[in-house]
Image (cartoon, rainbow, N blue to C red; front, side, top):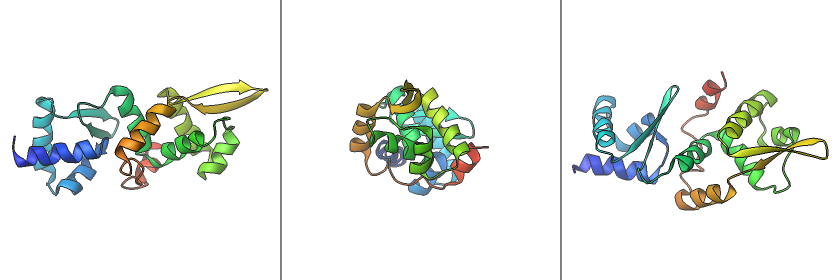
Amino acid sequence: MTDRNSQLQQIIEQNPGIQFRELMRSSGLKNGVLSHYVRKLEKNGAIKVVRGPRQARFFSPKITEEESVVIKALRRDTPRALLLALIKDDDGLAFSQLVTKVRRSSSTVSLYLSQIIEDGLVEVRVVEMKKLYYIKVRGLIDKLIEEYNPSLLERSASGFEDIVNSL
């Protein structure tokens, strides 16, 4: 294994869910060179690549599918804020409380809340005629934050991702 391969694997292992541009900055490699090495590492099973609309995220092969979903949410500003607000409140939070706690517009909270519900990280329960949101994977989130803190809780490379994804 070359030094570049091991350097990239180490960066990816320490920063699960890292995106291509972040990996490019961290490694100091140019786009074409990084693409070449990433393709080789993926082909050899040394890294896992999760491709989504407009982005690819890189993981160590030891990261499970469920962990990668949580990591993806924790690496983005608004989903991370929602999850952390829900973790702090075991009694569940109403939508309006979430909007206040994460200090985002209702439409932004609605978009990201529906995504993390769809991803199975949050559940909705009706309690005394009120819709409340609860964290579903608290143990997994705690484990991942403990294992990879502070990299999972660092602000994403830019708030631009949240803006683009809300369109």
